[in-house]
Image (cartoon, rainbow, N blue to C red; front, side, top):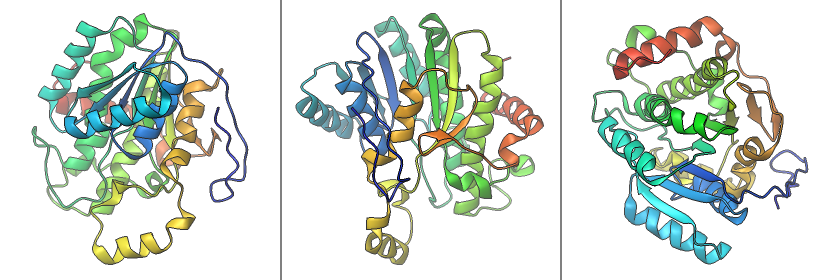
Length: 298
């Protein structure tokens, strides 16, 4: 059961007794933080949970912890590096070979505010992992999601999307790079992807949601300079714990009859920025993303 009453978060209360026996979920970046807490809750509900992580040693540690805490054994580590399309392809192939169904794809993993670097395929790291990596993963797993319908895709965004703009003239930030701008662009892209994907999946039984987990005390911002990290630690009591940061993800996974394509925050539908509501930008981003990845997805 989830009960939500912490005043630091919203002051709301929400709980669910939904069981997920016989259901399968993939949670990316589930070895730590919000992802691990999401996986833990899904496992408690009886789901088969695949922890899709870059670092297998950390993934195996998380699996052992979740199994110890929940008393369930159906939690599986699997290697996935979202900064490498070859790894994404290998992961998807493994899933098709090992799983007969997939009911939840939770695109949780991400990098934040890192110095400029590129993925194995040459994409700016934050855009490449946070948006393109999950875009490509969803593309590859979509047939299994459709086969398993009703199923759900949940994309973790951020309130920082409101500061974002899609720089179509410089998608890889080669002309200009600022860590915060690149991060905000990637989080805006998560919502635009959700919006467009929901339209394309109407009538398939696959629904899609974008989630703002709120300000969470986790290692996601490990690239911040020491003075800012010290400041955040001093005021960590104002931040959500990772388990609290998972509430809205779980709300979107478990609550029936939610609007597909919507943006959710604090366990309810919320308003996103004007840029995140722009259908034309969403369509263009979809086409550009397909071109960058070399795929056809209509």
